[in-house]
Image 1 (cartoon, helix red, strand yellow):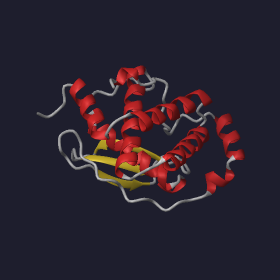
Image 2: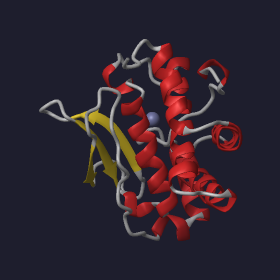
Image 3: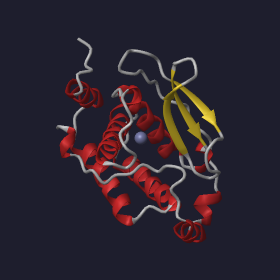
Length: 202
Ligand SMILES: [Zn+2]
């Protein structure tokens, strides 16, 4: 399926977007989730579109209590994923973030010009990475509907903590639900994206 047909209204939980009011409301209702901590899962294997191995690095940067990931290259140009505050979110969502960030490496996003933040091209890239992440959890980790539901619940909690509106939360969950139930293997999807971008290795 071409990425044009993915919903465009998905927004990744990201640091720095919290509205004060929404955050306090969420925090008041979610003390249990906000304060609980979890063990950090082992990262998945990850190779970018050029065949380079991607390293995962635990970091405490970012907002305390907000689990997040960043896909980038380090100072020496090696591809990395920084994992911030993973203890703040359940293992299924840690695993989802890892694969979402890996997907930015798999699809070549990391080496392409960054589209304007929260513009349509950026949101499309986020939808694509979300889709690849949930397909990997399904096909490589054996997530069934119960596993999917745990990812969706944690995604909802994390986005609510940051103050995202319901429409952003439900459309993001609807995208991964559609991928999970209708799409083929993750590598086929990745290859489709790479082909469209002229990045598919012969
Ligand atoms: Zn992303």
